Structures are given as structure tokens and as C-alpha cells.
Image 1 (cartoon, rainbow, N blue to C red):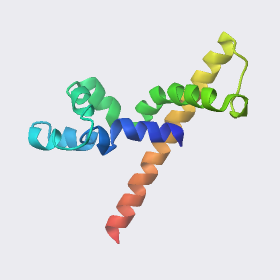
Image 2: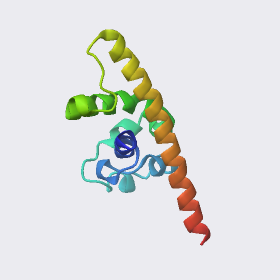
Image 3: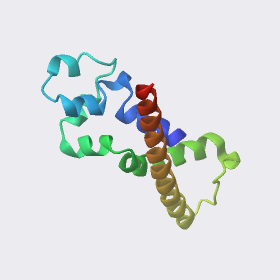
Image 4: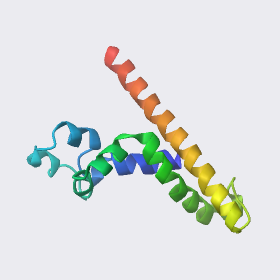
Length: 124
């Protein structure tokens, strides 16, 4: 859930500007792109194709968000964190790898579930 929340903030939350889907559909509509959001950070990154592709794919974004979420949870919860480990290099590498894979899967599943719920509500 933490990873998906961070990924949603990066890719689609309107606070950082227009969402990635809207930007990719109308990249030349500057009035719309720069009128949405409080902190207009996302349009700066979306000018580059790398970030357009990264922000459009929740699985890909989840790979990068996983270690960040892992680090945040580790320092916020300490030994209460479910994936608490010894501070050795091997454990950190394993932790980041597992966090990346778990985050990518979770972000992808949550995004697909949101599309499913959205399409179901459109049918009704």
C-alpha cells in the first residue's frame, strides 16, 4: 500500500500537475498542462520520453518506488517493520531486491484493480 501510494503520487496525483495519461494524450495543450495542480513538478519530467514511459507503467514505477518505501518503513518502524533485517550489506541488497519485486507486483495489481473498478462503474 505504501508503494502504491508513492507511485500514485508520482504518476497521477493532481497535486504535482496534470496526470501522466492526460499529458501523453495532449502534450501540446500547454494551457491545460500548466493549469492543473499546486506544485507543477510533473510536467517538467514528462517532457522526457523516459519519464513518460516510467510514469505510465505502474510495474516499472513500482520497481523504483520499492526501495524508497522499504527505506521509509525501515526507518519509521524500526524493529517493528515486518521485514526488519540485520544491517549487513547482503541483507540490504536482499531487502531492496525483495522490496522492488514486491512493490512492482503490488503497484501493478492495484493499478489493474483500479482500472477494473473504473470500467465496471462506467458500465453501470
